[in-house]
Each structure stands twice: as structure tokens, then as C-alpha cells.
Length: 311
Image (tube, rainbow, N blue to C red; front, side, top):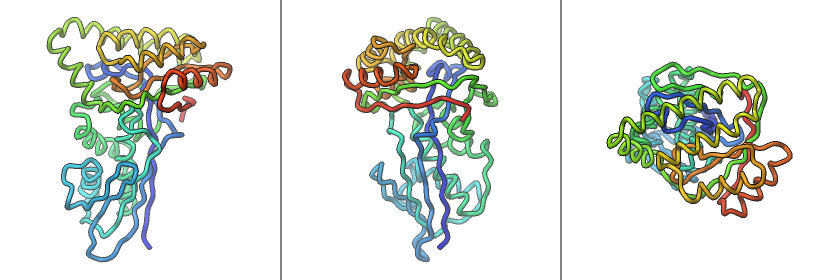
């Protein structure tokens, strides 16, 4: 039986979220421990294409769902490969928490497009895959920065400026993060839209905040490339203060951040769209377990761990 499989990693934004939408840089890295997978298998003649995603509670035929994200991803793959709709079934699964700032939408789209393209015998380069996933991201997020699809599709740490070619950056010394999930699912387009409303009312004030976040992000890249991990902690604190000014943090995120810092995390901040979702804490081998336990006590819905390296 004809079949094809593919996977795509989640992603974590280290610095620069929200400001990246307004021309400032962001740093992000893939999360190889959290992935989305897709498998395409041949089905009976005349059945056309169907998509099943048990994690999302979805089971649909391509003809029935013209505006659903995975359906759009499949259509984009068919159009790019210039192939008719096959008689096949796509099964999608993911270990990435949904609507938590970890790139779940981009990863599931990327895995589906990669698997379906392989099934059709159509090779996609990372830039082509990223462009297709970005089209799906627009459906999910309205005005996405493009950072999720870039990191997920290139599968490398990226220094990203919207509208420019992505630049991979060197991680001189791997570093460890503990990720605290608030359990609150806040779609990125909601917080991006709220920041845009604030920007329209006070553009000069917010442009200054964005510029300061951009400078922090550049300093963070320099620290990562020189292996100066300890410098990242204070920079995370500064970035978080600006995100609070933008109104994208939340009491739940602030509680987890404070809990991590109180037991020795080198730094902590929200990651992603905010409003809910996740926070990240920079830890050492000696503080990782303690920080994780503190996040549990502070009400984290789940605690994850990641090592950020070259990928």
C-alpha cells in the first residue's frame, strides 16, 4: 500500500515576540522533543482525500471543509505539486500543546504538507514549505509575523526580521529551559490584535517599546553566540517587563514567572502570544528540578523541559 510520513518540530520564541510584528528582530528555536506527525495512506478508489486529527477532534473530507486549517494545508500542497486530489487518508497527531505559543499550528501544517507532498512524489525545499505554511498561519493568526513557519520549516535556530530572509544563528553553549504552561489557551491572533489596537491609539509610545525589545533581542543573540548564558537571565527580565507594558502578560503567567525566579531561575518571561499559554525559565542543572517543582506548586497545568542547541 502506498504511504508516506513526515514530522515537524514545535518552536519556542526566546526573545522579541510581538515587537517582531512591527519590524524588530526575534530569536526562536525548534523544539525537537515536541513534534507533529502526519501519515498519508492510500484508500479505496473514489474515496478522495480525508483528514483525521484525533488530538484536535477532527475528521473531515477535503470537500467538506474549505476553511479549516488542515484542509487549507492539504489544498496548498495539491496546488503546489499540481496534482489532483488523491484517494488517500491523512492522519495527523501532535505532542505539542495547542494554543500555547509552541507552534502547534505551524508544525501540524508543516507535517501534513511534507507528508502529502512526499506521497505525491513532490519535493519541497524549506523556503517553499515555509511559504505554504505561512498561508495557513494567516488563517490561524490574521497577521502572523512569519516566525513560527520559518523556525518549524527550517528546523534551525533563527534570528528573524519580518520581510527579510531568515538568518540562522550559532548557539555556542546549549542552555536549558523549564517551560510552564498556564493551561489557558489564547489564540495568538487575539493578543496580536490587542497590541495592534494599542499601537493605533499610541503609535509613538509603542514604537519605543518595540525598539527597546529589538535591542534586547540583539543583545541576547550576541550573548548566545558567545556562550554567555548568564547574561540571558537579566535580558529575559527586561523583555518580560516590556511585554507587561504591552498588556500581553497575565496574572497566571506572572505567578509562574515569579515562582521560577523565587527558587533560582536565572531569568523568566512569557513566550509566544501571551494572555495565557506558556512561560520559560532559564535554568542550570542544579536548579531545573527545583524550578519545575515550583511551577507545579504555583498552578502550572503542565511542566516541560527543553534544551536549546544548534538543532
